[in-house]
Image (cartoon, rainbow, N blue to C red):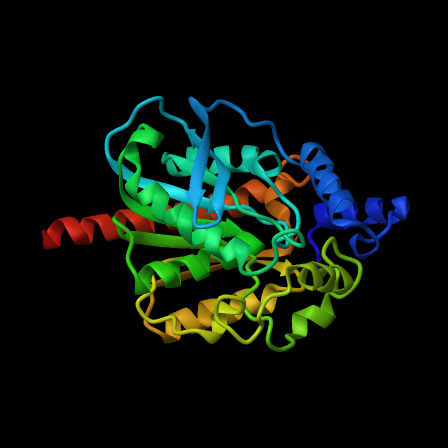
Length: 317
């Protein structure tokens, strides 16, 4: 059952009788998400550094944004964040405020990655950009003005999927610094088969089944390859994980399945669920204030995970 704030939001949205995303063009959907983020999320708030980046990839340069609550800092972990939006929508502006909050919650620099979007750049463009961006962050301290001695990978929704795939790629062919932890927020992890939550929440939520299919029709992933469905791949040896799902979400069961598979594969994992919440809640901190509590729990768990990894490595050295 949705929490009261979510029920109020869904009731209000129902009165608008707005067209579903499946009836829109990608350009309309992108503009809509920008407006939703402005209305639903909090302002950027106090942040010492907001530095535009140009990130080279195998297919050309993409944009990025460095956010840091400290003007200067010593060498340490750098967070690479992949925004949500179903591989079709989302950008630096929709997620700037949330990424700044991540930086404050972790007291770490965050690089927000503006990977290419479908349908103009369908699968595997986003996958390639995500991996290339992480490798660049690991090896270019001068451009960042701070040295990364480790990476923390994170993302919401489609960005959560990219987080997992990038963690797998960097496990198999390590970057110049290790990945010490990962956090995925309501990720899509398996496009190869149906899950009960897809039908349970097919209608009446912000993300519907029709909308979910619209995103994937544009993305055109290979659903039987681990780059498109990371749950199908080998998860052993991945960095410790925090997995946060939404209780009223079509992709809820994919996130639950990913957490369970990590545990089965021997990966230290913290699983949390935002009970009664809906997909895309990271952009709802203004209109659903309880979102802050869900995020605080998840990022406290991530901070503890990173600290434990660094303590273990220091002891081993």
